[in-house]
Image (cartoon, rainbow, N blue to C red; front, side, top):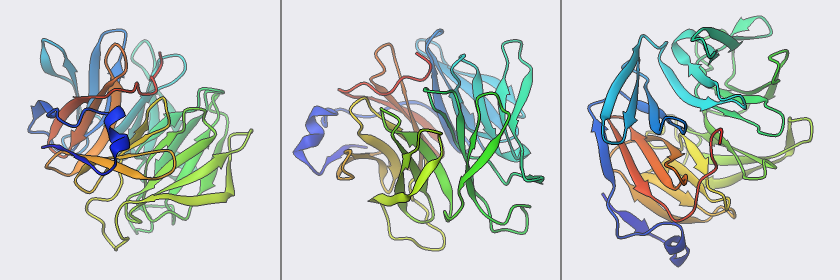
Length: 295
């Protein structure tokens, strides 16, 4: 496992002579790495394993919960509550301080969602954005794969875009003026301008970065994504984690040696990049801080 430099610009972002550190392995599709700053630990999902675990420095990996509705992407809202994409239950859920569950979204126009995958929160108003891939498939009630916005009070759900082959990870630019959405089967990351009311300007839609040629089933297309404080995008893709500058230029790749699923920022200074693959949890240090999750 090594870091491949494609541009000298990579050197100020990450030290290319460091090695990835493996924190755990043996998982069944690790996903959704989420740093819990108050307790200094990382929470992550096992989608197929149907479990949720945490990693704590000096302690290691501990099982937190079994039977998680095949939860995938995780994040926190403006009040610090955990949000989960529970693909097995076809819903986005929120964990309240007392441990009870609030359903954020489980249907659209009277039909159950397909299989929610990843979720982010807009800091300016607390609204919740999530992807819902899977369709078209006779297994799912909705005939399209959608990207949605839920108002902070959970009073409304808006379909933002529905022409993705397989919408997966999503992340805002640092100023939240752009929403990046990964199209796993399309092999690319698309970018949209965010309008003041939180919807997307569909006329601004463009391919931010093409990671792989689209095919019916893309085994290493873009999955989970994060951005750093300077707007660089870190996306899972062919070989591991692609580092892409705000102009869409591929600067280098953190090679993981496995199919890579997601990334997440953490550590006291938010300069630790945690990486999940199908079977492992990894970390590496960066020179630029990531965007904090509930900091």
